Length: 240
Image 1 (cartoon, rainbow, N blue to C red):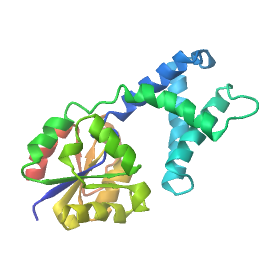
Image 2: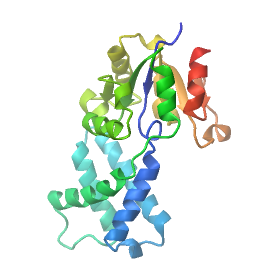
Image 3: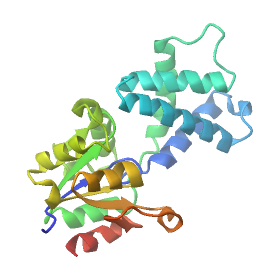
C-alpha cells in the first residue's frame, strides 16, 4: 500500500536538540562562573546529558512530571559538580536555575537545514504529524519557534498527555488516528533506532531511521527498517 501520511519525531530529527543543549548549558555555567568545577566543556556536557537521560526516563515512565524532572536534573547536576548549597535547593530555586539555562538554550534553537525544505516538498502529497516523547505545550512552542509548526496543524501527539511513550504502539497509533489513516499507510521518521524505528515498525508503520551519524554502518539494523542519512532522502524513499 502507498504511504499517505508521515509522522515525525522532533528532537534531533527536525530540531537540532544536541547543539542547543550544549550551547545553553555552557553559556549558563560560564555566566554563573561555574565552569571551573569541570575539567572542560565536554565533561560538563557529558554529566548534564547523562543525568538528563536518567531523569527523562523517570518522566516518561510517569514517575515524575515534566517540571519535576527539570528540577531533579538541576539538583543532581549541581550536587555532582559540588556546587549545590549545603541547605539544598527548593523547587522554586531549582526551577529558576533551569529557567536561566533554558533561556540560553532557547536562544540557539534551530531546525536542521534539511527539515524545512523536506516538509515543504511533502506537504501537498502527504498528511503530516508529530509523535514525540515530551510535553505537548513544550513541543508546540519549540516547533513554532523554529518555523515548522504550520506544517502539522493540530496533528501532534506527545507522551505526557497521551499517557504512554514510544516505543509503545498506542502512541504511534494515536498519531495515525489524527492523520485519519491506518498504520500501514503511515511512515514514521526518527533518530533513535530502537525507540523510533523499531517501535514504529512493531506498530505496523513504515519505519525510517534517520541516522545522521553513520551509526548504522557499525551495528546490525533491525529488519523492516529503512535507513536514511538526511531528511533530503525521504521524499524519494517514500515514493518507492
